[in-house]
Image (cartoon, rainbow, N blue to C red; front, top):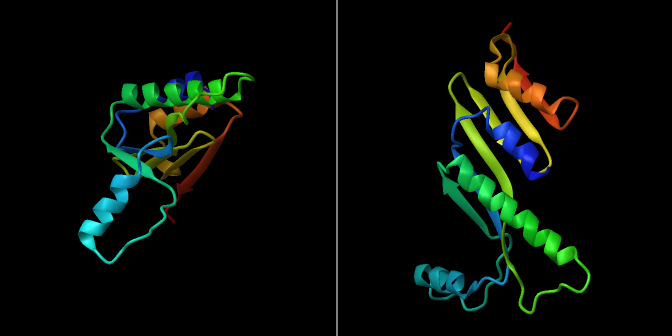
Length: 146
């Protein structure tokens, strides 16, 4: 999803509940092991899988700035002859999540928009997002009460 598409979705929503970002590249991960060893000194060698940073209640503008910056970094890495001397530091969007009144949950990733809501009480912002995306990448999960 390009940045303008994400921005067109965000304009219909309040500030998110949280945003998760993958931490990728030339960061110094040594302090992670040190922190784990503070909990259990017996751990000498450890490997870490995905490093994820969660931002609670981020501003939509912050999400957009980080997302745009990561897209620029990826574009730079793909340019021939433009390889950096050191691994770049990238905060890559994993997902942005909203927990909204009326049991509405929205989860946006770079590849999809997931909206979980009561079909009999579709919020106006859900309708606006669906219009915005047209035939795009919306996956809907709605609950009907019988």
